[in-house]
Structure formats: C-alpha cells, structure tokens
Image 1: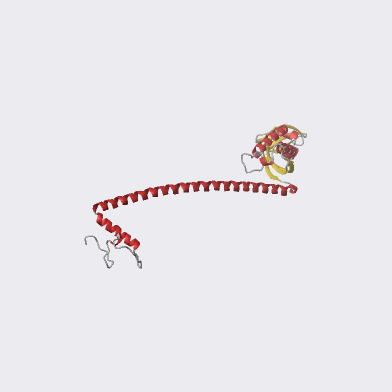
Image 2 (image 1 turned 60 degrees about the horizontal axis):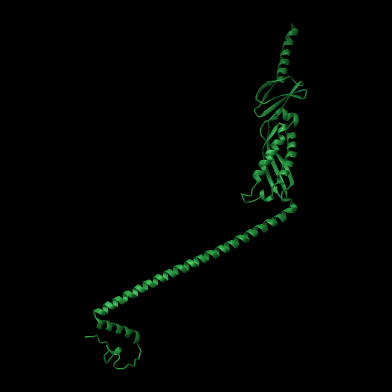
Length: 298
C-alpha cells in the first residue's frame, strides 16, 4: 500500500515530463522541422500546438518565415564600356519550402552563403551588358538601372528556387569608382559638363542674336509705319491749313494780305535791324513815315 502511495505521484510526474517533452508550440512567425534521430521527417507550416516523440527520438528545429535581408559585400566589377566600378547590393528573401530549405542549406547562414555566390555572379553578368552612362545619368531616357535590377532579381530567384527559398527583391546600395580611377573619372565628368556649358552658352548667344535682329526689324517696321502716319497726318494738317487760309483769303483778301505782311514783319524786322528798301516796296505798304503799322482802311 505504501508502494502505491509513492508510485502514483511518480507516474504522474513522469507523465507530465513526457507530455512536456512531447508537446511544442509553433508561432505565426516561424516554420518548424521535426527531425527523428537527426533526419527531417515532417515540416509544420501552420501555427498551433503539436506533438512529437520526446527527445532524443524526435527534436524540433525552428526557421524564421519572415522576410529576411542579406547584404552583398562591396565588389569591383566591370561594365560593358570597360569601366571598373565598386558595387554594393542587398537582397530580400524568404523561405517557401521549409523541408527543402533544411535539407539543402539547413539554416539562414547557409542560404546567405549561397546568395553571396549567386549574387556576385549575376551582378557581374548584368553589369557587363550595360554602359556606365545607363546606370549613372541625369537623362531619364538613358537610365537602365531599374531594368537591370529587375533582371538580376529574376535570375537570382530562378537559381535559388531549388534550395527552398525565394528572392523577392535585389537593389544596389552603392555604385562607386575605385580610388585609383576616381580622379580621372571626375576630370572627365568636369570636362563633359564644361563642354555642355559652352554649347548652352553658344546656343544662348545665337538665340539672343536672333531675338535682337527680330526686335530691330520690328522696331524699323514700327518706326516706318509711324513715320508714314506722321507724314500723312502732317499732309492732312497742311492741306487743312491751306484750305482755311484760302477760305479766309476769299472772305477778305485785303485783310489776309495785311496779316501775311505782319507775319513777314515778325520774320524780317527784329530789334536792331536796318533795312534799305525802295520807297515803292510792298513791304513798306503798311508802314507810315515813323514806322508805325497802318491797318488798311484805318
């Protein structure tokens, strides 16, 4: 009786331990591989509570199912136009088939090791098909960087598919020149910008000349038109003046003659002027002996 009293709690304790070693939980952020004596027997991809044989018969290996990122170390590569450039890139990837992933690369470190080799080779192949001006430029029509990275993403994704994971994106973090070539590249870039500046200044000077010529031609046309209108208005004014003079002369010819003579006096006789004229001169017609103007009929 005393034996049973101690045996039952012992059995209960052993059962609790066995159950604790046999049950395990799978989180939404992970995959679980169940191994039996080190060999994978099944993959669990859904979250929940699961059972297995206690260790060391069966064990669990947990794999992160979230998106992961791997940085490719800086590498010197060659472009299509034979330019040496330093490239640093990164890629994002995730596990698709946990069982295949575990049997081929075992863990994220193994996946990153495969990615390092594949990425380096694909970057080298892709860059060798593009000129540097297609990757670093201010001209949207010449820019091919997005096309190149999409192509690399597709190629890398095809090559890693047999390992049970997929690549979702590849991007370049840096494009730079080796230190030995950097100064010469900057000098070429400076010379190219100076050439473009000279071309723009030349085009600006040419355009300014054309604008000045057009403005001068327009100015000449406007002045000519204004002169023509002025001549026409002046002619009309003189004709009107002649008409008025003619009407005035027709109404009182003698008075008109008198006014014209006075105007002549204003033009000819000024202070200090001495005139020597014959006594029968028309200019003296309206002057008396003392030089006083005498109005006709006065």
